[in-house]
Amino acid sequence: MSIVILGIESSCDDTSAAVVIDGVVHSNVIASQKVHENYGGVVPELASRAHQQNIVPVVSEALRQAGVNVSQLSAIAYTRGPGLLGSLLVGTSFAKGMAIGLGIPLLDVNHLHAHVLAQFIRRDADSEVPEFPFMCLLVSGGNTQIVIADSPSDMRIVGRTIDDAAGEAFDKCAKIIGLPYPGGPHIDRLAAEGDAKAFKFAKPSIPGLDCSFSGLKTSFLYTVNNEMRRDPNFIELHRADLAASLQATIIDILIDKLDKAVKLYPVSQISIGGGVSANSGVRRAVAEYCSRHGIKAWIPERVFTTDNAAMVATAGYFKYLAKDFGSLASPPFSRVSV
Image 1 (spheres, helix red, strand yellow):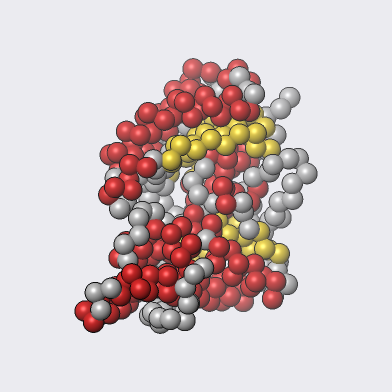
Image 2 (image 1 turned 30 degrees about the horizontal axis):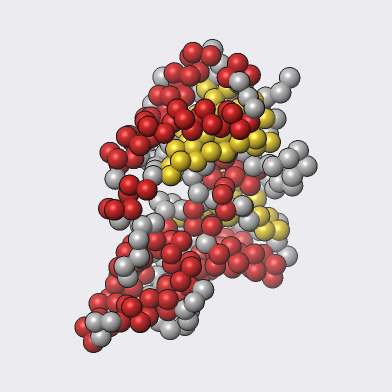
């Protein structure tokens, strides 16, 4: 009998539902919220209200696309945290209510675990997936971590940001030069048109495998403000060069820490995950690094880099196999490490 997992993701501003059958994804529906663009960032109250509007049609569409009836579901996997508490409450409440109504188990998923396990999202039964252990460079709007995954449930953080994440640096610096939210994709697009050596920004000197991006933001702001005093048209004239130089600096920081991690924890496989892993420069840099060092690189499809329920359902599938079921009494949580 097939194992059919419905996954629900509502940790931030994307409402998503997916169906995974015997480890193979059969649908992955995402409803993005455009309202936040007007505010330059996610507004938690607006996000939770939008989740309430979207969750029923998104789940219904995921089931329809997969050709699955609710009576066929084996369990419901949902993002319990970390994330925005109001947003998580919507997904958590919906998953619990549906599980009670159907009399099936719950599978509570750590959002960061799901990003690490996104490499196991399979389009078909023959899709190639990593072998444990492997190293994951987890880069998103809220987290930057280097993780050793020894198994689907055993993950060790060996390095992390001590302040802002790489995604925050992209978004906040993008805002400084007049780009809309989210800024990361716009920086990526402009970087292809600019000179990565046009500007030199500060790179923090953080010992060990931890990293920092707050100093880079300050350096970026200082450069822009200083040049704007000389030429009010500076941003318009150099936006692409600023984007390219910013992206190159962030990539240098990430690859430097990744290289140090590999020397301390020799691995044969490296994956990337999280929203920033959609960045073309990051993807290329990690692939090139792995090629130079004889390491297998796992680069996810872009659709599975941002918040999506396919990764939640896949993580839930591993939990189902291990009989690691969740509790109706478990509340969502806003902050936690892998």
